[in-house]
Length: 297
Image (cartoon, one colour):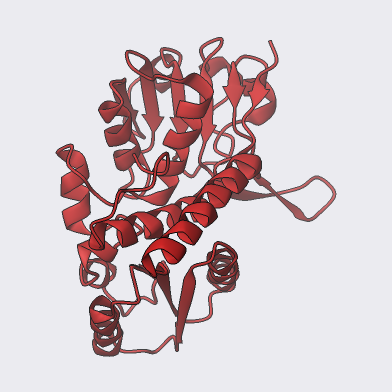
């Protein structure tokens, strides 16, 4: 069996087109332009590229983009003061503080300083609690993107066995909550799980989000399962240089799975697309307008 490839680039382009269409309608009919503020502290090269891409795609969708680049030695007080100003700014509907932050800054304190309704990353403790209790929340972008692709691939997820490998607050836990909300039977596997291979082989949906290159091999995959690979790892290539791989050994898993996301080109492009979708959702909620169709959990 050769798995169908779930094309995250194409799916993300479709999501961005939906966002752009609904942003245009919002602007034309209500005179409202959604605004996203991104805060970058320091000069981490990967973060700089990511922030640049976010700004570019935000503008392409017709939204307002506000970028705040701060020195690496910026004080916690100064960063919190900026967040307070953005919280109070009616032109800003979404706020994202790029992680990781320099070591002298308390990430939890900074994240929880963002107004929950503007927390388009879905990391604020209020949004975490709302998601866990099945209430309306801002949902973390990567799990939201995974859910969208699963719904597109499988239709209804009700009754399917889902295994999430990884228990991070950013992906693993919220992914499990979203799958529960769609009536899956969910198991979270992690480094202490006994016979993890056998646990994974029971999964109709297998989500790998553990940060270990090519950990999940084909003999962990149930024949016909849908495999979502969240991992992005850089490894050495034979003959020099590096290449990107996921948490799944793609070659062996693709021989067994029914459908699988590649790395790169799978989950990754969906993260920024869902950030834009969340910003649109946040704008609609604060203005008591109908939420965008097909772009929420």
